[in-house]
Structures are given as C-alpha cells and as structure tokens.
Amino acid sequence: MKIIAVTNIKGGVGKTTTAVNLAYLAAAGGAATLLWDLDPQGAATYALRGETHERASVKRLLAGKVELEELIVASGYPRLDLLPADFSYRNFAVHLAARRHPTERLLKMSRPLREIYATLFLDCPAGISLLSENVLRAADAIIVPLVPTPLSLRLLVQLYEFIAREGWTDLVLLPFFSLVDRRRSLHTELIAAARAQFPQILATEVPYWSEIERMSVRRVPLPASAPSSAAAQLYGQLWAEVRERVSAGPSGAATARTQRSGGAAMTSADSLPAEAGTSSTA
Image 1 (cartoon, rainbow, N blue to C red):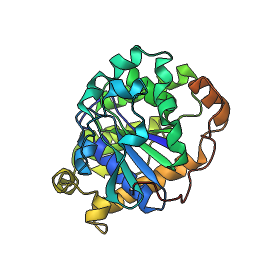
Image 2 (cartoon, rainbow, N blue to C red):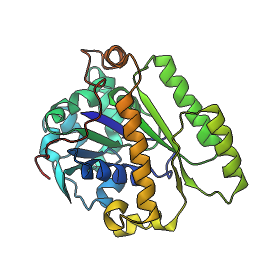
Image 3 (tube, rainbow, N blue to C red):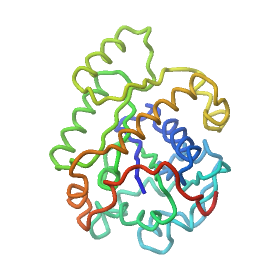
Image 4 (spheres, one colour):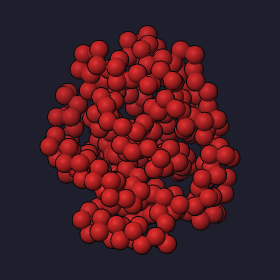
C-alpha cells in the first residue's frame, strides 16, 4: 500500500479538493483506495457525504479500543472508501504525546490496511504538530498545494530543509501550484522563480476557478460530476504526474524508510499498483 499525504502548513490552499479528486481518480483507475480525513473540520468527509462514526474518538483509536477497519465507510464510488473525520481529532497531537513512540503511531495504525488497499490518501489539517511528524514518517509521498505567494515558497524551503535534516531520502515530495491566477503578475513571477529554484515542482497548475470552488457545493468529485470539464482534466493530469513520480520513487528507499519507521523496511520501494482488488466496503 502506498501512503500519499496531502498537506501544507497553511490552510485554504486546496488540500481537501486535491485529496478528494485524486483519491477518486486512483479508485477509478482500478486501485482499491481509502481516504482518511485527519482534519477535525471534516471537509473531505463532507465532500464525500460521509458521517462520523460514533466510536471514532482519537483517544479510543490510539488506545487500541477501536480499530481503523471498524470505522471505514463506503463513499458510494467503486473502490473508494472513506475514514471519516471526528471532531476529537483536534486533540490528536495531545493524545499522541501520551503514547510510547509517538512519532510512529500513524504508520503502525495503518499497517492492517495494507491487506485491503493499494493506496491510502491522508487529508491533513494545516499547521505543524506531532501529527504532522507522524504523517511525514508514515507517508511514501507528500503532495503540497502551493498558492503562489512568498510565504508559501518560504514554507516549502523549510519543509525541504526539515526532510533533508532528518535524512528521509525515500520521501517523495510533490509540490504543485494551486489557486493560480495568471492574470496577476506576482503569481507569474513567483511561479517562474520557484520553478527555477525547485525544478521538481509538478508541471500541472490548478487555477483559481469558480468551477473548482463549486465542488464543495455539489459534494461530488469533479471527475465524477463533470469528467470532460477542463477542471476534471487538470486533476487527471495532476494524478498522472503524482502517480508517475510515486511509482518511480527515489533510490535507497527501503533503507531510508527503515530509519523513518524505526523498524523493518516497509514496501515503499515497490511501484504504485496499476490495479488492485475491490475494497471490502466499496
């Protein structure tokens, strides 16, 4: 199972829209896919018309009194399942800090899911916390939506520096520009400067379109509601880039993953599956 997190320190950059559309496309391509909404605000859960499970408190999860598999619900789309958010997730970092090996809990909790899913997407809350470090340790790839502003680029530099400092050479970092308005000269200038500094930024850019904003009103992934639309095509291009980069992966992944997880090497060196069996709840 590949774990792909969508995250940014800043909020309002298009994380949830990205996570929902790419998870849908992964499932539509034949892979059994799970989207775990880690944000207590539950935007991804809302977008997929999910409902919180009454037993889904983070305290119960981390104490082992309830298993992740018990909380999975069908999304209504083939091969795509949802782990809904819970408002208790606002205290995720607090409860993590009380556990042994707190930076590795998310990876350990997700291990049973490997028998069911080919891809696990994590829709992450904004900010820096112990949960953020758990995500970085667990993920095979990090998708970072970037609004073309000086602050966004500064945060990207800090993220690269943190990953380099930790020696996580197996972690695939996938920044891309979101909410782009090419009519603004500042956006055009910043994107050009960033691409010169970071050639690994994905080529696909997601513009600031009302069609994309309306997804939260329709509560349907764009490729499902309007598959031939320009917006849906853009997310298709974005997923193609992400999938290619994740499948290629960096060299030395198995060794570096061992350092991150603190245990035996995981399967992150494997290629992203083109197809997988149908999930248990889809």
